Amino acid sequence: MASSRDDFIIAIRSAFLKKSTQQKFSLLTLVFLSVFIILLSSLDFRAVRYLKIGINEVVYRSSFLVSIPENFLKDSFIGISDYTTFFKDYNQNKKELSKMKSNAVSNNIIEFENKELKELINDYVSTSNKILAKIIMDHDSPFLKSIIINKGSKDNIKIGTNIYDQSYLVGRVIEVNYKTARVLLLSDLNSNVPVTIAPQNVQAIITGRGDNFGHIKYMKDGFSNDLNNQSIVYTSGTGAIFKSGIPIGKLKIKEEGSTKKFHVEFYSDFTQLKYVFAEVIIKTDIENTTQNTTNNQNSTPIDVKLNILEDELKIVEDTKLKFKQENESLKKQINNLNNDILDLKNNISLQKQKIEQSNLDKKEVEFLKLNLYYSHKCRRSFFNTKGFTVGSDDYRNCVLNKGRKN
Amino acid sequence: MASLSSRNPFRKLYSWLPIVLLFISVLNEFDFNYLNLDYFSFNFPFILIFFFTLKDFKYFDYFLVFLAGLINDTVVGLPLGISSLSYCLICIATSYLRNITIRPHIIKDWFYFLFTISLINSISYSVLNLFFSYNLDLVNYVINNFFTFLFYLFFIYIFNYYLKGVND
Image (cartoon, rainbow over all chains, first blue to last red):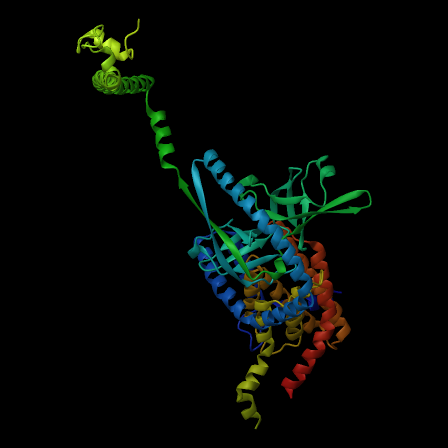
């Protein structure tokens, strides 16, 4: 019994300490070294962090190079499988494109409205800039679902940066190196995203389980009855980890006996990703608003009253000046109008005179005309003793009456 | 003639092939994800390390195995040192088996391999879950363990063929 225990101890000791001629380190040394590294990596020392970033950069690039043959095989496999469903996909895409075009217009309007409202709520404007990033590694292990992108701190990528496939959410950055970053996919077990399920407006959290779909968890009881297969899942923005309103996927309800299971079918296929967009957000403060608010906060009530009175005085002076100017302009207008009236009166009198003259002229012409015809009847002569003297009023009346009337 | 052939660079590369393969496998990860096979995964480095350290292959350096572990952690995104520790534990297990075995038998080795990888995966799962608060799916670990165990027989057939070639 004792000898077998001794044999065991000897075998163990030999396993730990014995080095072959080729081995440079004993296994015990390497085990201690591993434990030491695990401890160091769990402690967030700056030197260790930089060392880790350096190792990551080198390893990710090397991995990219080593993966080229496998990626080629992978692409060929995907290419061949794509060709088999090419026509079907084409028709489907055509239909979807026409739908999306119509949706795009309304989306733009909503986006503008959203931006305006956010500016009203917050005292900053967030301008987002999406940068294209290439996936250099997507070997998601069965335990951790993550990808490596070729953008890092050099390109303003930060921990928590949202990653998109077109406009769909893919995940967020969990590790940043100088020129690379690791993205935790939504399908990972460690990923928890606060979401809103529309149109029912139900709040929930989705988590991954390593599958190509998400699982709904932490949904309040009673709300699940309203949900259906057409419900859309998008980020709610709760917790400020993810931006609000980013589409994630469609809800799928699976009934297993009496219980319902809610899955989220992601819009994006994480196994087919080649390029993604990283959203770099830059916050700019609205300066005027903040300045005004700070001024108001610093001043006393008397100062505020004085300011108000000064403002009122300014307004009164301004209005007075305006009234004066208006008064002068009105006076000028009245003078001008009086002048116009005088001119018009003169014109009228002149016209009256002219009319009178023309009337006289008309009467005179009439008299002369009749005089030609009836002068012999009205003029006193040898044969007409009852006639009148030419030039007298009676003569004129006689001519106008076309002869004497008894 | 024999000395000439050992100096041949191709011959040298052939001798270092297992370690090269180990580095390629940790850098690349043969995951076959694009086949969309649910739950299918196996740990090729475990098979490789177990076999060649059990055979005490002279070109299979422990330190290089340790480095491969560090690279694996970087690629997969695990805390640095976890895989190195796992690989070193496999080396210890094989070294122990070698010391206590007088007449090696393939089936015994196979089941000892199952015991070793189960123990190492358990340690790895516990460390990640308890000390690093990683959420991990135990089912995935069990399936990975099972497939690695199954593929061992297939790979040792190829590796034995390789060893024969090297010894010749």
